[in-house]
View 1: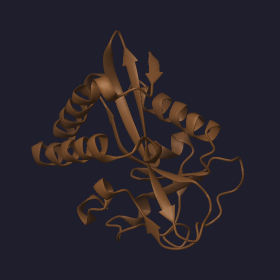
View 2: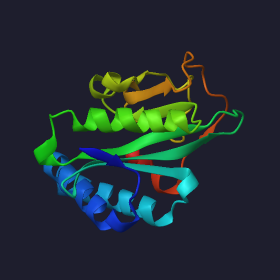
View 3: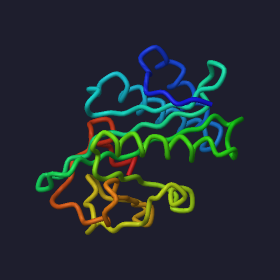
View 4: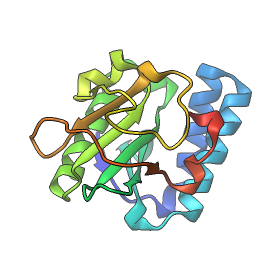
Length: 179
């Protein structure tokens, strides 16, 4: 398995993998929501506001994750949020997602990103260094349906310090139904 940040030639395959994975686990309606989210991100975001990482083996995409920029008005730190994440159904449970996220977090560290956030299952994301944070630690851009799923980690080897000020996410994530 190898990792890549190249995605321009694989956008259709990446979108299809997200759609199939979410349809298989969450149903057709959620599959369409995530398909539209990913397609919107890949079509509209500038490269400096988005990082796409994929795991590839024998020319096939095993999994893909997308980090997008978060802005905190009163905080100078560089912050990215991980969302969404998908591993092809036939490759789940083999550590692909954890290895892909770990690789991506190291790449973000190497490129000066200070903080990574995500919104999901603490049991999964804690395996790659995320910990529960409160809305006082990092104000989400929209109200959270499940505050226990708000997670973060410092990428500069220091303790996670609260982010200051209101936040803003990229336009495709700025949808209350996703939060």
